[in-house]
Structure formats: C-alpha cells, structure tokens
Image 1: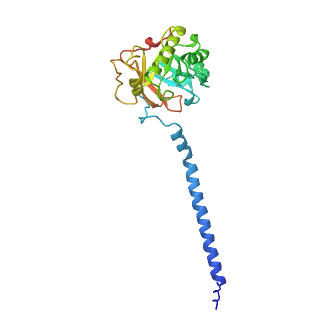
Image 2: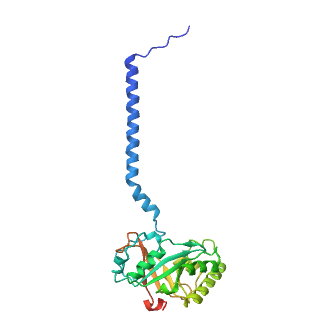
Image 3: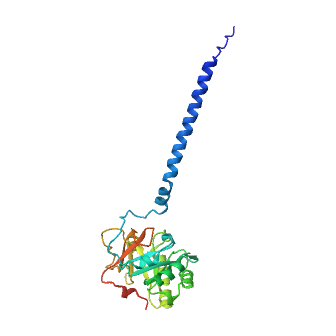
Length: 263
C-alpha cells in the first residue's frame, strides 16, 4: 500500500519562504558591496595598468636632470610651468612612428614648448618592419628643419623591433641615419634601452651621440668601449606642468647642450 505524503504545515512553509527571502536579499547586499568596492577602486586600477612602467623604478620628484622627452601619453602640458624649471635644458617631442603614424599632440607640443622658450627637438619611433626610406619620409613630412633647436632623435627599442636580427636592424637604422644627416645636416641622436642597445646595436653605433635608458642608480656601460651622452635614469619623474609621469634624463661624459644643438 502506498504511503500517504506528510503534509507540510502552513507555518513551516512560511518559515521556509522567509529564510529563502533573507538569503536572497543577503546575496544581493553582498553583491552590491562588492560592486561598490570595485567601482571605488577602478580609477586607481586603470591608472596602474594603463601606465605601467616597463621596469620597476623610483619616482623622481626633484633630482639632477637636464631634460625630458614626451609624447601624447603625457596628456595636456602646461609648457609655461615646465619652462620655469631651470633644470630643463632640452625637450624631445615625439613626432612620428613607423611609415605612417603621427603623434596627434606633436604640433601643439612643439609650438607651445618653443613659445615658452625651451630648446626643442623631435624624435621618430623606429621599427625594422618598415623601410628606412618610408620612415624617413614620414618624419620629414612633419618635422620642419627651421622649427628645430636640437638635432633629431631616433628611438630604437625592443618594442617595435622585437624579433629583429642585428644585421637587418643595423642596416635599416644606418640607412635612416644617413637620410637624416643629408636632410637636417647632422646625424640624429640615437635613443635606445640599455640591454637592447648592447645586444643589437653596440659597438657599431657607438660613434653616434647616444641617449641611453637605464632605470637604475648605476650608470650605463656600453659594449665596445662606447660612452653615452645622455642618460635617461627614470621614466617616473614628476615635474611642474605635467600631470603624468615623465622621463628624466641628464648629460654625461662631458656632453653639454651645445653638442646636440642643430644650429
């Protein structure tokens, strides 16, 4: 014979409903708290991961620097305030990259920096994947010689050249530098990262003016007996007029501003 189902009392059903409701509201409350915490911390997390330095560095608020280099990533710059910093003798501004890219803030930064009385130069971000001639034409199109106080600069680093062989990179880069010399009258300053430069460019390029990035308290040592002219010692500098971190650099080995003037 089949057993009769035990009937649940009305009180028990109400009690179960109340418990389920309380659990549901508790989960909603916990979820809301977690979402609120995430939203409150989101700006800090975005800033942290959007502008993550490639190396661990110390923030440099006020040290012995002589110049800076900037691009659109420094945002809107108050050049009048920057010019009040008497330590800054030179400013390099990103103009172009590869065969077609143009930094959208280049023209504004160039004109305002020069108007503020700063000595200004322009740089090109180099990649071995595009021909030297294409890249030079892109640079020349936007960088007018008569508006330059400093010799041009070419930025050659791992980003943009990952996977390049010494032979191909050096061949393309040498061609680019020869084209710059012909157009602007002087060879460009060569910017590179410490380990990347020693691995792929030294000692063949030691004869040029070298702007080396080494985020350390130890000075750069170039393979083959070369000497750096400018040392970028941090990418987390803070100066008046620029809200974002900025690269700070200093002259070395007897180099002065006169050595990098275009005229």
